[in-house]
Length: 155
Image (tube, rainbow, N blue to C red):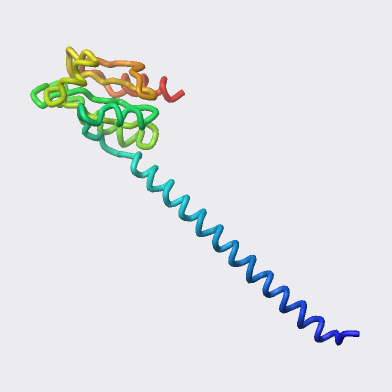
């Protein structure tokens, strides 16, 4: 028969090895999960803009395709109503950060996209869902009007 002290010592040694292996595995799982969460956070922060982002002919399709819901402000620097609506668009970008992407397309510098969407009057706000135009607001309108149209898309 084995000595009780020796059995306790052997079990303790096996138990310690098991715990040590388990701790190592848990540490690896935690590290992997932390890396995944950090990547997700970086991706989300990259998509969470609190100000409208410049959109061009070159990046328009990629930009609207990579955001489920986007509002694109089609404007020109010489357009007084465009200048007046800009702070409203910036406010909305801040309030809807993470839910709606806000972009600004200078129609003078990006005539191809303006032509494709037949932008004849500015400001024009294009509301894009999954890369497709779902709504359009033309002219200077109050914030609550824009917000109501966005909320329809968020429902």
